Length: 572
Image (cartoon, rainbow, N blue to C red; front, side, top):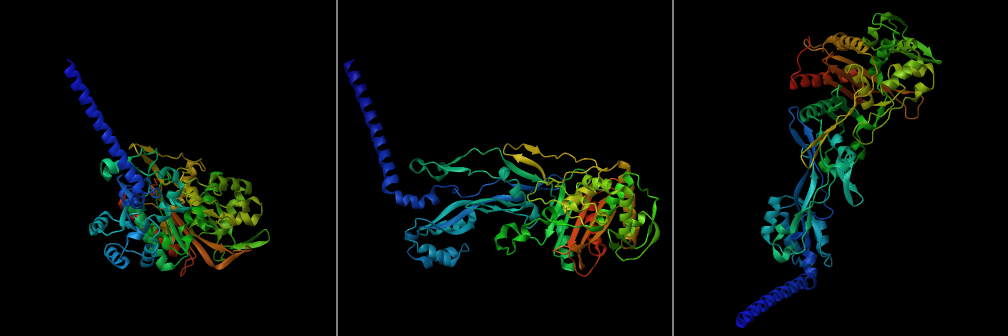
């Protein structure tokens, strides 16, 4: 019995000694790693242990939506590597540079400036290196060269919908969304690094075990209503307008007038979010459809006519005596050609785009009621779109009470609004008299995979149902018979449309340029069951005075594409 007990105690002592020995060895190893070799490990830490440096951006994705429902990446994170060096370990800088340059594009001056910093433990010399390239570099076993795991924002569809998507840039020393959806949904898209360092990994295992997942927050990826094929066609058409008429700005929107979903939105000049740093004029980053205000011209006339019909001040059979020019508040204003028409029906106000006719309707309505309708159309108010820096229209001229201001406002001069305000107001004609809420984001796909749908509420009613039916009939006649002599009429589809040509105001006020214009065009179809509304503008185009010349055919190009692409059934 005593012998057995003695043997047991001996085994316990042996095991205890082994445990103590292991503990001593581990402690010694930790001391060696953290103290004796601390500088060496500090130099190599980025390349050997860190999955993602603290400054590496990490964001959720942005998607376009194809008409079938499939998602197409608009913005995502690209995994890869940075190339870094330990300057004191680069014995032959010229040879190392030559070898690295076989695999990656390096800045020579920066590389050699970095190698000269022998007191620095770590210098980055190359960026956005693919896995395949990193593997080839690693195989060279170049002393003093380390690869740092990295990721960066990329825009695979770029420059498609660049103004809408936006891009990520620096704010101080960190990257954030600075334009477009990247900015307006910064808090939704941003997330922290998905890896952290396990300090004991080097002792017990390899680099794979050193990386452990960090629980992600409750943010997610954006699913937009931008349809990539429609967006591409819109941008192709705008490019053609720019090539032919060289405007300062050409821009357009394709929207569902019932839901307010924006299917395409583009502006020229444009840019590539992947190379935004090469842009010399940062004003191109601004979205003129959202941020800029313009006097839109005669596309205001359908809304003026609608107000007159809505209150019973006129009927489709009403007539007026058009004298060509009249005076208001001591100032003369005229039709675009200064010519009188005599007694003409209301339809001709739209067919011939008669300024005096629009002014006549406002006189019949009364200034106060007309002003109420301007506000009811949402003009002078932000739409609340889910994009940053939305501008707000300036309609204070109609609050001053001068007859000339109301007359000018009736045909879209003296009041300036954003393109978004204008398309929302005009959409009331295509949406049974109700204002939609323009928006780009359809939903947010959370990390769980659940999609949280975003459905903005409809806006207020601006017009009676019977009013919009009447105005739609009138606008179909404009497209079928008056616009370019009726050559654009579609046999099987009714299209309601109107052009606008506005003089551009002098920068110091007091009048307008005589030779500078803004051209606008809108149309919706099928006219009495509208699925799309298209809005186009061209600022200071050359070679044509009227929007019928610059934008009518580009509009029809887009309309035909939409009809074919979505298999819209004919309505006549």
